[in-house]
Length: 326
Figure 1 (tube, helix red, strand yellow):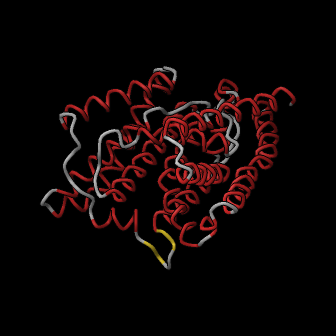
Figure 2 (figure 1 turned 180 degrees about the vertical axis):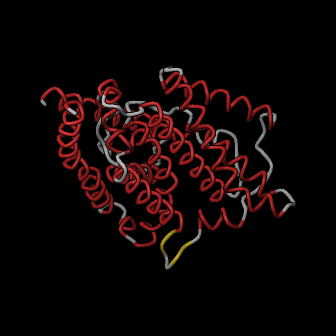
C-alpha cells in the first residue's frame, strides 16, 4: 500500500509537470507558421494547412506508438522495417488478382506490425535485453528478409482502393488520414486513462522495480506497449503505401529520426516516466511544418537530419536541467 501511494504521488507530480510542457510544441508551431508566412504567404492558406495535416498523419500514427514505448523508458528502433514490411505485405496482397487477399491486405499488414511488436516484447520483457539492441537487431533481420524476398528491387504490387482512400481521401475537405490519426489518438488516450495502463507505463518508466514490488505485471505492460507500437508503425506503412500507390525499399528509413524528435518535442522524457500523447501530436505538427519549411527553402535532406538531431539534443539537455532542478 505504501509503495502504491508513493507511485501515485510521484505520478501526480509528473502529470503537473507534463501539462506545462504540452503547450510548448503548439505555441512553437503557431509562431513558426506565422514567421514563415511573412516570406511565404501561402503557408496560411487553407489548402496548404490541410495538405500538411494529411502529411502529418503519416508520421503521427507512428509517433503515437513510439510515445507509449518511450514512456516505459525504452525505445523501438524497428520502426523503419515494421513500417516497410507492412507496406510490402499490404501492396503485395492488394495487387494480387484475388478479392479475398485484397480485402485482407490492411488487416494482414496490421497483424504483421503487431507480430513485430510481440517479438520486440519477448526480447525486452522476457529476456530482459536492452530495447535499443533488441529492436535494432529485429529491424536488421526484417531488412534482410525483405531483400531476400524482393532481390533488392522494389517490391511488386500496388495499393488497394481502400488504402488510397485512407491516405488521400477527404471528408468535407478534411483529410481521411488526419481523421484516422486523431481517432487513433483518442482511442489510445482513453485506453491509457482508463484501467490504469497509462499509469503503469509512467510508473515503470520512472521506477520499474518499485512498480513490480507494488504487484504490477511489468512484463505484461511492456509486452502490450511494444505490440501497440508495432501496429501503429504498420498503420503508418499502410498509409504511406496508399499515398505512394506502392511500397519501395527503405520506405521507413526517413521516419525514425523525425518520430523520436516529435515525441521528445512533445514533452515525453526519453528516459521514460513522463509524457503524453497530446504533446506528441503537437510535436508531430511542429516537425511536419518544419520539414515543409525547410523543403521550401531547398534545404538538403542531410541538413534536415542535422537539424532534427540538434533539436533532439537540445530537448534532452532541457529535460536533464529540469530533472536536476526538481
